[in-house]
Length: 217
Image 1 (cartoon, helix red, strand yellow):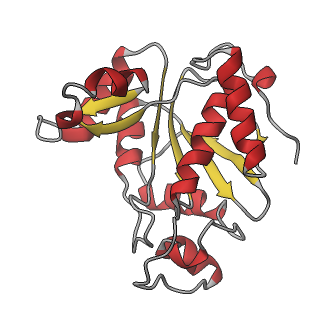
Image 2 (cartoon, helix red, strand yellow):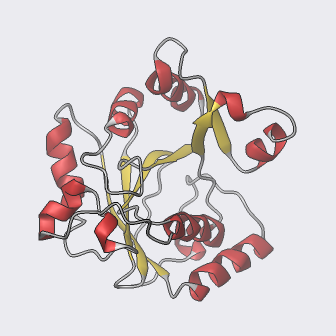
């Protein structure tokens, strides 16, 4: 598969970074033996999801990708974390504080943010955990549908040594149909820790069920 680089990014994609941060991102990916493949559509607003998530190294992989491409990607955290002395650092890192008790909850707040922004990429993990979830959380789908933004699917494939930009689609009212489409890109993927695969992905290839053993991240 052809490697995707910062030079291939369209003008509508939200950008953030410097020459040094791009170099650092490339060094992170090279150290992990990874490259970026696929194609990033030229959209100003997207819901970004990544799977399978079985290790803390998946997060390092995603950070390396964002740095290498100079893409401004936001993640979500509880508003209660935004206190001194961490508030400034969290905002600088691109973390969005969400009040889960507010009317509409996470879905309502992020939908409003999308609707008010000219450019916004938010990254969420549909598995919700790296410890072999029984099912996927569908909040990302509800947010994307309500905000009218496409879903970008990233596949973390350690076997092929890549972060693959696998799909970008407009979500529809049938969440199960869309989940089936997303999971279709996970078939044959090798995660960092196979026994931690979430059940929906594991059932694609009859991988072993996660045990209670404390596995290294």
